[in-house]
Length: 72
Image 1 (cartoon, rainbow, N blue to C red):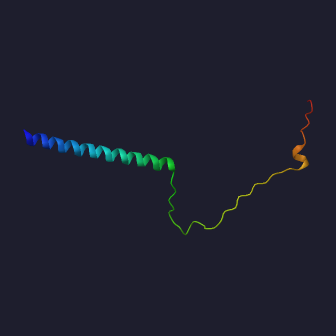
Image 2 (tube, rainbow, N blue to C red):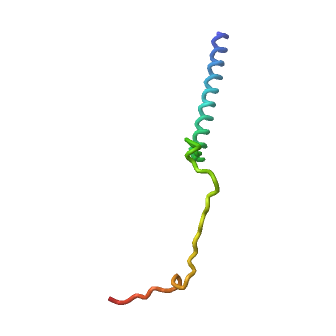
C-alpha cells in the first residue's frame, strides 16, 4: 500500500512538472509571436549601413490656395 502511494506521488510530481514545462513553452511561444522577431536568413544579402529617412514639407503658395468650385 505504501509503495503504491509513493509511486502515485512520483507520477503526480512528474505530471505537474510536465504541465509546468508545457505552460512555460506556450508562454514563450506567445511572447515570441507578439514580439515578431526578425531572423536573417543570409547576412550577405542584407545591405549594411545607415538608412536615410527623408521628409518633404511643401510650404509653397499653391499648397495654401483654396480650390474654387464652379456651379454646373
